[in-house]
Image (tube, rainbow, N blue to C red; front, side, top):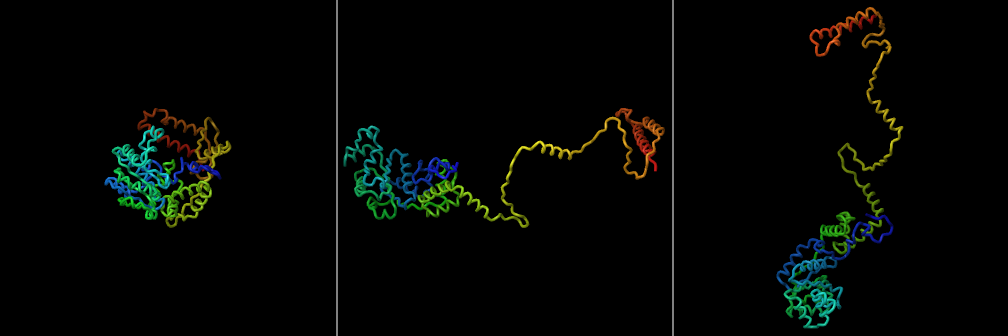
Length: 388
């Protein structure tokens, strides 16, 4: 979750990361973060299968030489017959003692902390102690930034093989520094790897793996277009690219509001979608929806409106004096004449023929005739009471 603030120190946590995914260092497990390099891996594999003595990995700064060596160290440690030793000559320079670096991982806890036998031995005795500790194992010496090795250490590496030590050496350096150094004196380069720059797809995959390893998702907070711009600006160099990613992530966090406003403006200026002729394009508008509780007056009004839509039927129960109505279909100007005696006669005749006095299930042909007779009497009764 992004913290809204104008001053942030822990920018990685503010972006939802558990650490800095763009740091210029090799993360473990190395195999999870190394992208592609299939061809280089095959060459290194053949180098050890064939038992070659010396090989070099050359490439410009930041292209991934250290990552390759660390990957190789991790792979070799899975085999008990090889003792892999990684040395960064740029860090130790004069202080590095190659034999001590080889011996130290082979010592017991007591020897490392208390007796420290390797510090009391020199020359041939130290080399003999190393061979004893190695037993049947061979040594894979991996020297990063090897052009920083002193002449003394170079001579030592060259002599170790002559002394009968089972040794394979792989060094890394930049093209210019390798040419100026004495490294080719160690032996013939049986590896011959020149690391290329990563493709955009490889760089994108590298960022994805790093981001997800630190709790992020995909390439957040970058879009593909932003990654492409940084990739071009870094001139395809992975180290420079990671630095740009780190700086851009911090900028996005600090200037989040400005970035969002800019993106919204770009979205508005974008061309509308093409539609069929005669139809307008649909605009992307936001709806402002507010919800509140209806008042009692509004509810009553709605009930009245709904009531108007219903069909209401009124039943008149009981006797009610009705006003004379005009028969539908008769001409205006007619009047009704009331004759009580004539009316009673017709009613008596009607009762004698009414089918209501019989049960429905008993109705037969005679009853049907009575029903039709009733209809005639009703029409006659109506006509008798209406005259011009």
